[in-house]
Image (cartoon, helix red, strand yellow):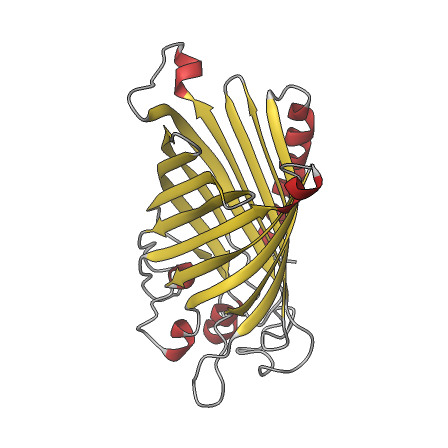
Length: 305
């Protein structure tokens, strides 16, 4: 097991215990389980002619958000299952793993935790001004582990301010954080015969999160996020220069539960994912990096409790 995979388990356990302990003190909370199917995701897979091979993924997610006197907590954990075009290889050191369409699909776990500390609540002075509802200090982590040919296990820490805007209905939060990532690369390990651990420079990261309710005959919600991460430099001890990474998830979810008198309990909808220079890999550098590009619709269902 990689170092970062072990850290992922420890972080998830710590956050789960924190959320459980804080649930009793929360002023409000929402927990949901969702299922997503996206047909044309990616896993940096190419065929014999160096053409991109699309990878379908099923994603099961558990999300929790809660607010208390001094701020809020958000935790999400995704369990992802690829189709056979991204075969599992357990990160065993084979430089490029099994070919697409062979063996069982790879599995991945990815977790996100964020805490927003309200500067209004801490200072005792309202920072509300015009459309600005509050300013927070955001801190947290991303962590993941995957068992395909590369055996990646990213771990990232983030910290920085976020401006929360109040809309007539809904919200938009815009944050600028410092982002520091480390990772593991079986490819780097097998080619250069050195440690698989890679460390990147601290980079700026723009985060925009929104949720806007509207009526489409039944209650609905337009929600999503945009993350833009600047260049992280060259992963050491070996690695190519990274590029600015852009990830967009936008979706329209319909409150189907409201049709049965169970408002805010069951949603279904469609969305769109756009991912350029995935993980900072320069798409213009080679065919494998270009194969990481995503521009695809998806379907999603959610149960809230």
